[in-house]
Image (cartoon, rainbow, N blue to C red):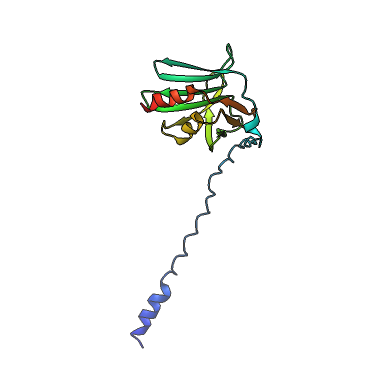
Length: 178
């Protein structure tokens, strides 16, 4: 028993085990601002194939960057533009107007054979346009070029635009593919 007594005294004198360290307070994740409101998509009128094309004509040009087709009234800013950036082999499809309260908005193009919605962004120029960059092999460009007489372009907050499907559309597309 005597041999146990020093051992018992030693254990009695030892300090209790340290208390576990307090857990750190949980860190709240940083607040992410809500995304800006997205403008609602412009409704497509069911009778759009019966609508007359908007006033204006297509003009085709070539410059240092490539070819461009502009639709609109003479002496005014174009309402709709197709541009081939030849060095980059890209087509830019633009519509007059701008995106408000959002970084991007949907622009829908309806043809006699297809419908496609594109996400467009402000170009930052004056006058203001929204645009989308496309591969020249985008099938909807062919649908626009070969649409029966016209195609419809919708953009939220803007009137619908009925554009005649003239040869200038196909010329810009072919310039960019060539």
